[in-house]
Length: 320
Image (cartoon, rainbow, N blue to C red; front, side, top):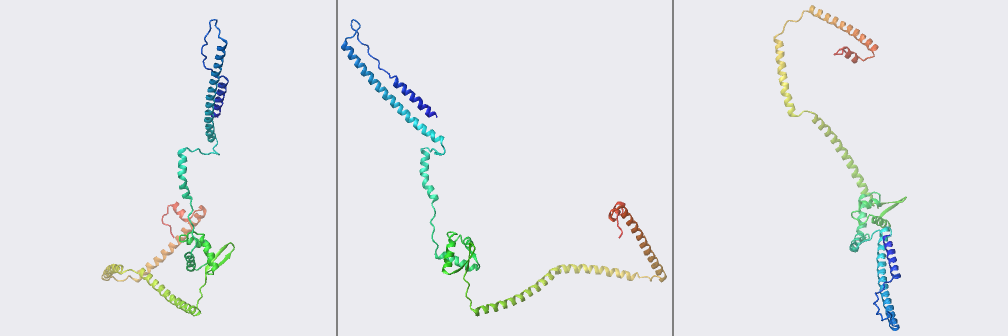
């Protein structure tokens, strides 16, 4: 907008200059005695003045046109820059000379980064690698699993799909289609019947031997468990010393009993003691029964347990 206003001002000035051209100063005309010029002299002076005015007008017009042209070029450059700045979609960036040089020098590096490495075709080594993997694995496998397992040894994971398809066409592996997935497995080995029978017999012998070894292992495990639970020799020696001391103390006490032996109790007194003991036992049972009945009635009325009742009553030892 500023550039357009400037351009309009310059055009107005140029038009005004053309309408009012500058005139050169006219020299003073010599006067005659009567204050009038001669007719021939006046005509020559008029022609000279006209020529001078025409040359001055041409020079002024030429300079004005030159200035207007320069102003137009400057305005055009300003308009272009302003349009580029105002319209970021068509020209999102207006690089300077320095940024242009950087962009030019950066192009080879960018191309070098985006360059794709060359891909080599699968070879016989890759085919043998996948074939050995299937034989060692010895189970149905899909192409994705093969590619994941061998992606460090093959150039591309997708190369395994083509190699597996080629091996299936050659008849070196078996291919089975299940929906959209393809399953590959190695060819079964052809075994001689005699070798198969020998292997079966050997397997039976190994199973019998394994059963014997398993039984012996269980026996040894139980023996070991018993030995672990039994005391060691050190523990037995320490226990032997303690037992000897206890035995000596009990023998000494027994000897004291033998030396301090008295006559046995009279049978009549013995019967009296037994009768009192029986009476006391019966009384104890009666009182215990009465106590339990009282406790049961209180528990039923108060809605408490025996422990809560005894705790509230201050009874510490609960009778059984």
